[in-house]
Length: 59
Image (cartoon, rainbow, N blue to C red; front, top):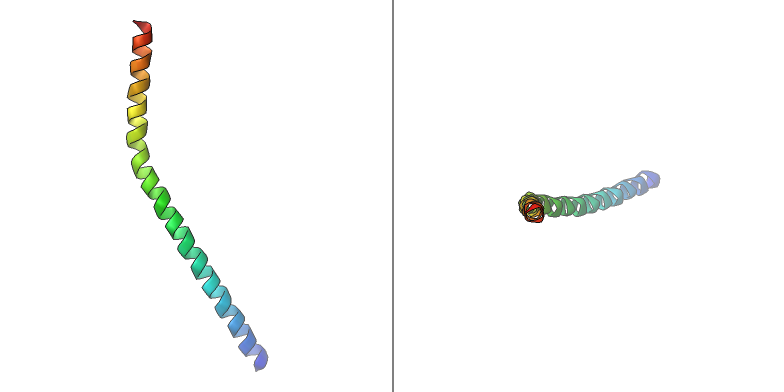
């Protein structure tokens, strides 16, 4: 019986650890999604800037 209680406590601790890790990973995922929302706009602007540089160098 005592072994079962110890096993249960161990499982509960592992569950809490996994829940904490999950929360951290969800926060990181959210941050990465925010970055990805911004990136395309910056990449498009950068592409136009690169094209302008190419055209001005050809002139």
